Image (cartoon, rainbow, N blue to C red):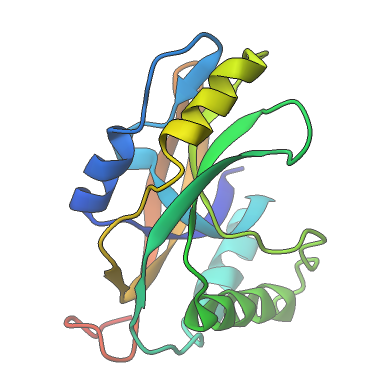
Length: 185
């Protein structure tokens, strides 16, 4: 069974900016450019029938394109031993509304509600026992990180396969905004 998630893909210039943040310090596995994305909802393993129902339900999510700007860096869990380095984003009411619409579609096809609060971020690296000092240096060095805003005019249903080298993502369906240049669902 494939693992599914709904996400926003990032424009190549934004991915390039994020890849420039990838310093080398022991214990970090950096996310590659093709896998950089903003997860709106992780679904886990879903059978073929569930995948079809979900894909159809997501067609009902309507939204207008909106700008999004990445900024800030940090780690998860906050206040604990770092396991993930991330880039955040400037507050966006439109992003939160889109994520709520997607969550409603997921619940509408009988999948359980997400128990975690939505915390928008881009995962940069997964960490295994990193030196606390290395994480703090990274966060201090990139404390002022910001990208040029980009337009979110679609979201994507992805499947994911885990390999030794990391996850490989495949686009299953693309859902454009109401005002996207190519308006086909």
